Image 1 (spheres, one colour):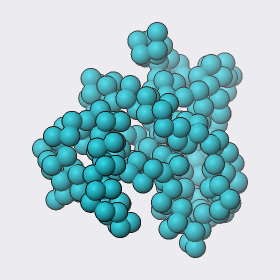
Image 2 (image 1 turned 90 degrees about the vertical axis):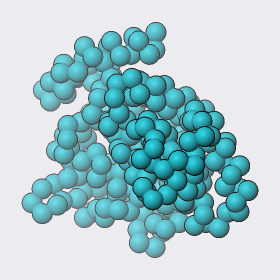
Image 3 (image 1 turned 90 degrees about the horizontal axis):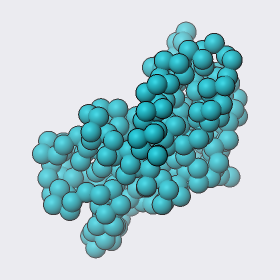
Image 4 (image 1 turned 180 degrees about the vertical axis):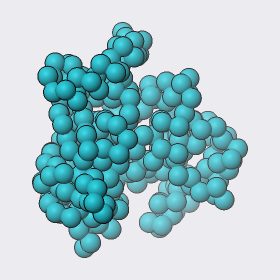
Amino acid sequence: MIQFTNISHRYGRTTTLHEITHHFEEGTTTVLIGPSGCGKSTLLRCIVGLVIPDSGTIRIGDKEVNSDSIHHIRKSIGYVIQDGGLFPHLTARDNATLLARQEGWTEQEMKDRTNELVDVVQLSRDHLDKFPSQLSGGQQQRISIIRALMLDPEILLMDEPLGALDSIVRADLQRDLFDIFESLNKTVILITHDLAEAAYFSDNLLLMQEGAVVIKGSLRELHESSLPFVTDFVLAQQQAAVKFIEKLRP
């Protein structure tokens, strides 16, 4: 579905991505994990054309991501950011249907699709006519997920979608997201700082450091790695990861 070939990018003197080559399989969930500043968000932004690599190529399906193709490609991508990115002057419904309205959908088409997705994300329809300031953090993030899924994209990109939520709300939304990933069969790339969360969502983990992919694999493969950075990263989070997985995946 998504192919990175020798992708590199720099901001000034800082290398944000360093010769990344990776194939994201269709219908799978891949989690990018690593410390702040390691290049996770930059990688996602390259996929949607918000960041232009200095070298290398990105292909989505049979199309290369470039200035000529990006407008069409973006219609096949849903993108969720950490704080939801809702427009405060629009209701939840208008935020959710923003892209569909731009595509010329009828009011009935938007209503039907919104009602369908409200059920998917486990949100009451009563919340659709409220403004973001009237919604909790978890409710706002569910609206942002509806917006990302509105056009039924093949790809779903999620940049720390749960990072700003408190632990109870976060756990509830984690379970709902897991069910969404399982049922909708999208190609998902999700960013998190939390190794426990990463292992819960997928066995396809990419651990990044300073713009490079250090290791690819499952939590077990990360655990068995002898690379010093991987060992330090896993040990720092291992105890919390084990407890988390035992609780949610008995």
